[in-house]
Length: 248
Ligand code: FPP
Image (cartoon, rainbow, N blue to C red; front, top):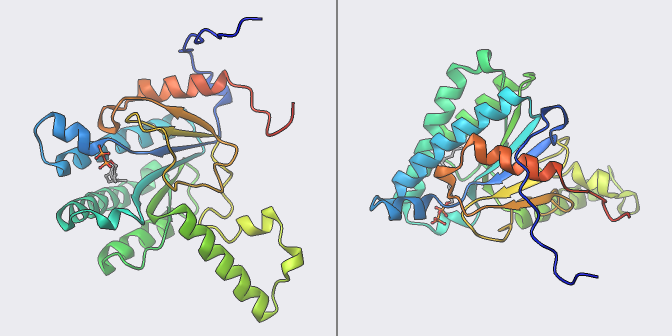
């Protein structure tokens, strides 16, 4: 038996009839993209926001059901205030545009994360986009904003404990399915595929519960350079994998 498995050929054709339901992306590499061009990190985030627009639109066009993106983590508050403000500013710009064309695009927007530390204006915009798009049937875009996977799990545990104290729940009745209902992602199917550009090989606290069985796809391409073609490569690669969920 051969001890060495040659690397399999990267498939290039996507079967658009059998797409994964949910793709999640860690939008990484904005800072390095800017540094390589001698630009401030904020320019990398601006380019990253453009890529996000392109990819979200493409996901809508190909009929993907759910797209989740990591826009700002609970740890990202450690960054310089100027950079945080720039990211929040880009989000605000995106949401204002999204609201303006929501009726036409029918993209459903959701936010995963604790929105309370945001400025009242940005928080209001987030809630408004969720509310307006509540019944839309295009792709559902989940923006993970001030999101941390461990934080999400602790919040869920707290909320469940509070329900037990109120008498509305009993510890012995808790199942994986009922616990999922306490997460930001309640009602959303787990991601089938998690993509991380920029060459980093870790999940960084991104959807740890939900991604338990997700296929992982890593590429060296930096997020601002990520394209529809790159997404197609990830989708085609995903379609050539055998998902066994612990079975044989
Ligand atoms: C990670 O790259 C990226 C972020 C922390 C911010 C992502 C934000 C955007 C793409 C813009 C706003 C989003 C929307 C949804 C409009 P990094 O800065 O850690 O890159 P590096 O590892 O190369 O430094």
